[in-house]
Image (cartoon, rainbow over the protein chains, first blue to last red):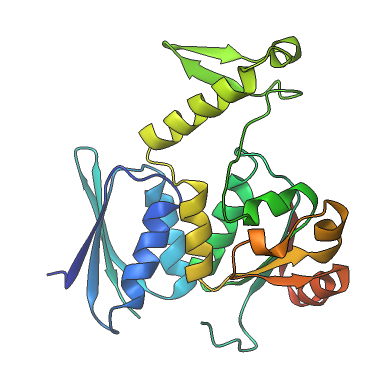
Amino acid sequence: MADQTLDAKGLNCPLPILKTKKMIKGMSSGQVLEVLATDPGSVADMAAFCNQTGNQLMGQSNEGDVYKFEIKVS
Amino acid sequence: MLDAGENTKRMSIIVTKGTLDWAYPPFILGTTAAAMDVEVTMFFTFYGLQLLKKDLDLKISTLGNPGMQMPMAGMHMSMPNIVSAIPGVDRMATTMMKNLIKKKGVASIPELREAAVDLDIKMIACQMTLDLFEMDQKDLIEDIEIGGAATYMEEALKSDINLYI
């Protein structure tokens, strides 16, 4: 279960990433952030973001047009 | 902000353009890099200085921009140079762009600039440009520094990525 959820639906690049960063800043290590987005570009971007920042992308799925990311804060 | 350790990646961007469309690349790349723990410096010079004004009134110029094709009524409308001479065309293109930006969930420039401040991006306004165009620092946002080419070079020499936009 996610500790917090970020609804980034309807937002375009780079807002999902910027908002994810802002949320993570306020969370502690080990907590899980769930991000919901509709930007298809966020699939590649969220992976790159996590790869670079050391936060762990635990899972990614989509239901319809909504992409769901689960990120474990480093 | 970041613990500026030896492994910290750095990026610098020289921002030279002051139109609504050209304001996007530097602010998008700058804020995204900062969100990815890159230490970012943006040096605003010449027309780029417009992007630091407290009151942003950015416009689009259709002149010399054959790549601009605005979606309109299911088609794409080009802007031949001769059209840009017609009074009101740039204003219309600006309004169209602002509407598209809202409709597509794209961040506004004030929003991205605020994010740049939040993410501790170092924004430097070019002193020479202030003098040249008789601009007043009072008209610029407060979260900036003033500097010149040497100030930029000091940052650029430490950077992994240097962009000129």
